[in-house]
Image 1: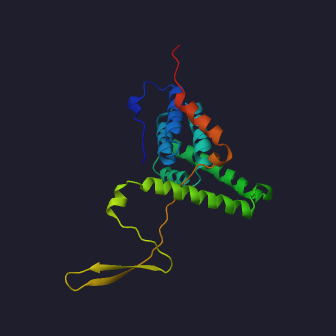
Image 2: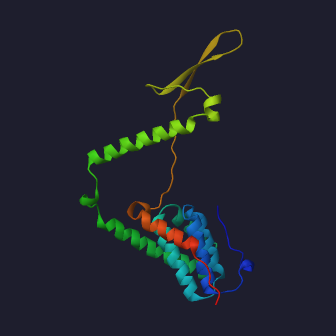
Length: 213
């Protein structure tokens, strides 16, 4: 989902207000990176102060782009041709910096000391599968799916066979070939490196308030 800030809803053109709104978008919508990015891009359209636009560019780069190198670059590339010239220039600038960052990351190569051994990875995978299986069984207890659907266990083969009753002619054999099914979810990179620092930053952004003077 893409969201935009209505310029009429902004009380003034105070640069602090734009940064606060960007922090709130990141704090509450960090795990929906395209939505958070769309809000920051909409703030770039109405921000008049160069310093505020530069701060928004920094927030778009870190923590958004550096944590989500998949969906956010695709969104920004689509937005370049749709935005005003000054906003497009800022998007191109942040994309160039992000490309340089990724180039430097790939240039490091693999660090053997940071790569877990095969035995450790297999142990983690087995433990994770056990946790997922237990969680699935717990979720299925008393669920409506368990009430209306039958369960079958597939031991081998590339298709499932069912027998369907058709009138008085007796059961009819039906073979259903198996098909691949996958689900992809983008996860913030910093969560693996510094989960507590990431959580602290998001909580800080959510808790920020403007202080009247």
